[in-house]
Image 1 (cartoon, helix red, strand yellow):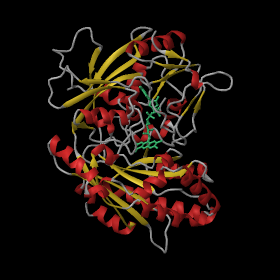
Image 2 (cartoon, rainbow, N blue to C red):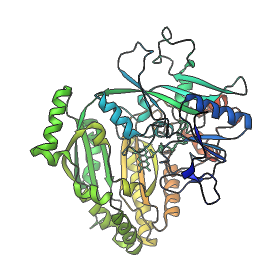
Image 3 (tube, protein in one colour):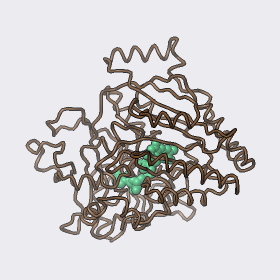
Image 4 (spheres, rainbow, N blue to C red):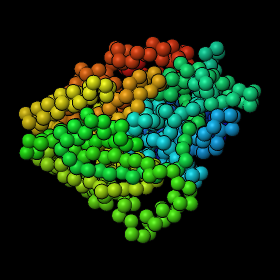
Length: 503
Ligand SMILES: Cc1cc2nc3c(=O)[nH]c(=O)nc-3n(C[C@H](O)[C@H](O)[C@H](O)COP(=O)(O)OP(=O)(O)OC[C@H]3O[C@@H](n4cnc5c(N)ncnc54)[C@H](O)[C@@H]3O)c2cc1C
């Protein structure tokens, strides 16, 4: 087989394989660590797991901080599955459909699309994740017209357990009115399943239905976004939200300081809009102008905030300030909001969607839950969250280290995605990893989210959520479970996360 086994630089003191997620709160000691290079390697690995009756699990970039990537069996690092497989040939549908291997990082994927004058319609706030890793946990940006990243998926090549025998099988999985034209699809290609229930179960299933080898995405012609970030009071922004702010822009997200300064909560409103569809030549010329001429200030985000957010010293200064002077947190968060203000930032869509501040973000985690927009349910939850956070801060001096993040996502038909059936607001509550009282803070926050019936992000802190709750808040849970049992008959794709959440 052509793949590397037990990669040398990923061993621990005892010379055993080890894998850590990016934040460092999940450490895995698998029995074996593999880096497959193609579909045959992947199929051989799933066969090995079935024959040896060992659990097997794929990982992407390790940017989840839930225990979704955990395994004590065979670990499949998909880093080498990173090719652009090109335009999908077996379709008669109109549009741009590009197939990528599952382990490609979004940064590389964006570059590949850019070369073709194409772009992702939406993505999360950073581009370090792998494609399948991001999809499997329901990763989202902030977009009420498109939805989360799963909305771009048209076809999935899944290596899984053949339900009819003890061996691996590769399926191409699509919606009932799927992308592939059966008349042109070669008979020797992987078996095609065009079935809404199967597709809507597999897209977001956190690695429990098999290992994804490749994904076909529906993408768009390259476009530009113009973003503005304005500091205001939370009261003003809330009024704008109630008057229909979300319908006015391509993307809106909001950062709120839950701790008042002089009796007032501050917030940063960020919104972006398309600059219009222009020819490639015009876009290139505009890009050059932006880079080299007088509009250089508009082609960059606030350089102070970008510098501070990527500078290790800032991180340690933050950690020290928060733990040593907790009473100053309302002011510290207000200052962080102020440094992120921008008059205007214009750039290619994927550069605007990428929010930066990686160094800080990759040393923090949050509980992030989605709650319906209807009847302003998210505003009711937010009021309760402010009360809880202010109480814990005033009385016990432990608190969030960053503003609350609000992002807005269109409803989806994917069975286990938090925006299933209704438009939602995702509410994120970031804490720096070494901040005092994190565990108990996230416990209280998760309890509050669940009291309001909000649904957890699968890749974020959700350790207090259990199957009974998931079953209650997802109307198609039992339909999802049917597919889970079909593709995972002997439990080789199960792990402690799936046992806690869905089994
Ligand atoms: C700094 C930072 C910023 C973030 N920003 C956002 C954001 O803006 N929006 C958002 O929604 N989330 C965000 N997240 C969360 C993150 O995007 C998700 O949790 C995502 O899953 C990470 O992708 P990954 O490639 O690192 O996946 P991993 O963490 O490696 O894996 C996630 C899950 O996918 C499964 N998996 C991976 N590859 C495959 C495969 N080939 N086949 C089958 N299963 C597979 C794994 O088993 C695991 O269950 C952020 C996280 C960090 C650390």
